[in-house]
Image 1 (cartoon, rainbow, N blue to C red):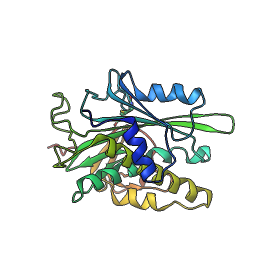
Image 2 (spheres, protein in one colour):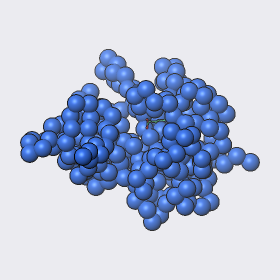
Image 3 (cartoon, helix red, strand yellow):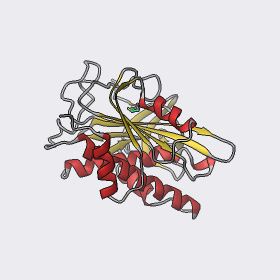
Image 4 (cartoon, rainbow, N blue to C red):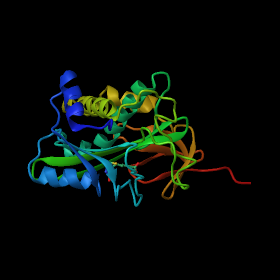
Length: 265
Ligand code: BTN
């Protein structure tokens, strides 16, 4: 029997007193983000969830594909109607990363999940989860599709990911049940995003941002983002990565893929 079931996720959500869902599960789809976008256009409520056991065209950030084989991992997308001003919307993806990192912490108990800005979730210097938030600004209201890929049971990865990816199973988690992990992840994402929304409405940053900073995997490392190179120096109140150029001021970077700079002779 599969450990992934929409009714078990819904039961677990109501046990945790969360009014999120409904949860739709399909065996296979191209991308759950595309499915959630279609549901959102048809009026799906805030908190509706789409999961697939496998994706034929799972998308990562940038031009990346997301490795999405059947029977192994979580591929989930949530319909989100954020109560955030447009200028704060970019923070949503960062708050989601905090929610996913908390989920990984809970499952692993004695390990700490880190966040590689903007929202890759790392344990032991390997990526265990990725987040893809696709937002559209409407007249007055915006809709975001929150997509998360979390490696759960997977023990083998394609060659190009073999040295950088990991899974909860490889990290030593036992008795893994994708339905329970999914419900916990939905709850943690909701809590982190609500913290962001409430704090923003009161002109504060919120505890989620302190937590993001305490999980910052890049801080102190030599990085390159586009044509900005230097030492990662934290994350500012707008969620931008700060990169300190040699002897200079920190440059805020709002988007882009971060690569590590390796010392050359
Ligand atoms: C990344 O790290 O590049 C983001 C990966 C996001 C993958 C998830 S899996 C569920 C959802 N559907 C997709 O096509 N992508 C996201």
